[in-house]
Image (cartoon, rainbow, N blue to C red):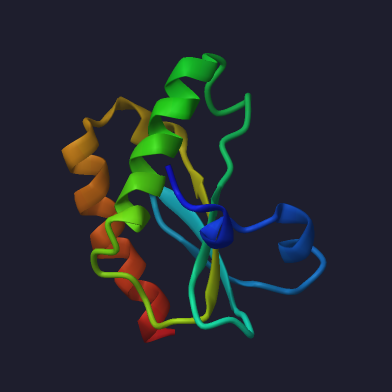
Length: 109
């Protein structure tokens, strides 16, 4: 589980205008923050997957990736990840590989 200080409260994120990157697997929204660390949030709607167990499984995999701090973008970024239905069929190793490839896009923008 991700430590509380690294979790992004959705209420803080939504009023601001985030930059968006859309890929076949995720929608990444991000903004710089005034903190010395990154904050992450994962949102999967019921429209994407009805089963809460499957939604929570994907959330755990994504948050575990950020907890391990592999290939994380520069410090001081708020990141909101919305996985698509396509990502729900993949195994955890494949999901982490895709995240590591796509999270690099944040540094390039």
